[in-house]
Image (spheres, rainbow, N blue to C red):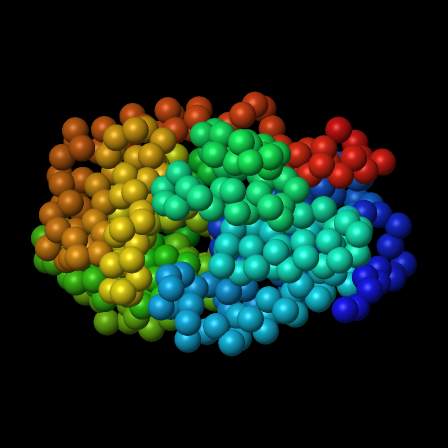
Length: 404
């Protein structure tokens, strides 16, 4: 086993944080944390790890593209297992040799938790000497398999939680857990008129937002279903336009998959226009995930759809609480957003649900009323989630020189 060796360089006096994010939502969280940590140390801080576009814009040079980690479901992971295991080993080795002050993993639990377990084992073999192990976005033990809380408490030092109800699931097992809020709660207000002008959407044209997911497997399964929904809607709503905010590493797949759609498609990969795109949408059809919460907070009436491999779905049906799949519904304690999962994820049911949101002001108003309520639930105080996360990390490390 190799001994940890700190990387050297002209600016190696500041603390070193090794961050690992494996998908778009985690990449945005990581970027916000990097900005906050840089501010806390007046710029005298270093970063290494794995991240995407947002983290790279903050100065991270990723070990490899995070699209390699973007898999979900037992039978989606199996074909990629050899490559994932190699990347897990590579990342673990890089994190250990960097001798970082902390290794902070963000979501993507199939990957990141394996890295953390291996680092914990190495640290134990070195008499407890090694990086602090922090994870942001805990497993959804409140939705399925609550016993996982006890397991991950064995090899993490600190947990950063998105939702106010999460710490109570982990702290009984001795894992210090901090509610740091959700970044969607401080997302900017989009400009619909600016978006329509920039992307030349006709005035008065009905606009449907389509969000087929940020993982290749999600896009592959959902895009054909969404295509049929759009075909039906286009025959009813004259001049319908489709707007698809997506991420760079599935953009080509989405572009190819929408080439023959029956309504003009505007593909948006630049995150600068993401919230403007939301604002321009009258209704959204989205894969289950963080984007559904973002749409709620943007005030966009939404229909949620999701499906996984049939075998993964059969297993998940026994383990997953369906009332916890859509985050807005979980936070509000009722089904504000209609959701269609697995065998219910059909063009017939989705089309009816989307049409209702286009046509029924009361249905739109019900979702609109949830927006501010959800926002208030997701902010612990005046800090952004990135700032609150940075402060929790600094509480864990107790490093000198940090400005609080």
